[in-house]
Amino acid sequence: MPALGADALEPLATGAWILGAGGGGNPFLALLNLRRLLADGARLDLVDPSALADDDAVAMVAGIGAPLVGLERLTDPAMAARPVLRLQERLGVAFRAVMAGEIGGANGLRPFLVAALTGLPVVDADAMGRAFPESQMTSFALAGLPPLPTMLSDGRGIDVFVGRVPDARWMERLSRQVTVELGGVASACRAPRLGGDIRRHGVPGSVSRALAIGRAVEVARRRRDDPVAALVAAERGRLLFRGKVRDVERRATGGFLKGTARLDGLDGDRGAAFALAFRNEYAVAWRDGVVVGTTPDILATLDSDSGEAVGTETLRYGQRLSVIALPAPTVFTTPAGLALTGPRAFGYDVDYLPLSSRA
Image (tube, rainbow, N blue to C red; front, side, top):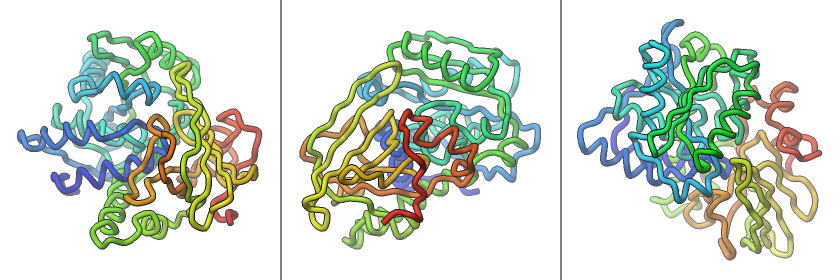
């Protein structure tokens, strides 16, 4: 696959931010860092999963923590690469590539920060096809693959290694508690995931999907078309609501950002009320008290004029937003997938509402 050039960075950031479903962290600073790294001569190679050998060792990277804390404790390329290099040293394994644990938000750009510093190619795949709040919410966990050793690093130079655990939920619990002690955000590397496992059980084409979403928005802006409508049409999604933020209740607790946003309707939705519950990412949406959208479908809030995603940490009174739903990877809409990533996994006693059933 061709290397990514400077012209691909903004569409990638735009698309990844939308796939974040409100979470994953704002990719703006990662975008600025990547522009500088490319200008300084870095190369960003993208590799299709089909090109991986069965035993190629791949590092999965992510930022962990509450997005609100990430607004104050900023990540740089060195911090993104640090746990990759430390885990490689610890395991005595030479990584052949790096990939995103989740394509959503800043985490979708994180492997490219690592690639720019290490020279490793980035795999066009991830384990979620969006962003989810917990690290066990992956296609690999659904396939029954064992959890990987994990290295967590912070900006002070602290490294914490988590080795053998009973299952993926234990890895999430321990990683989350370490992250809380590190101040609410940490840079993580889980490895090695083998090339054969990624081909069989990963979510392929996630980087390409982010790029396609970003380019659909970019083209609509250039033509002065409605970018939200263009995106919904391109991704076979659905517009759920247009409105203005009335109030936001949120709190950072236990390494998550939890809360509810409420909107009053505008245009064709005038007179209606809308609510969105989130735990880092949006989980359930209600229109006039009736459920109209749920995880694992990708619920996103976009600026109604620009089509730019608005994260749960930056929602504020008066914003004019369009709420959309995009289809989730099908692996998460199976009974096992819904048990892991459906609304009850977020603590909401409602059934999954398939995208095709929404008005």
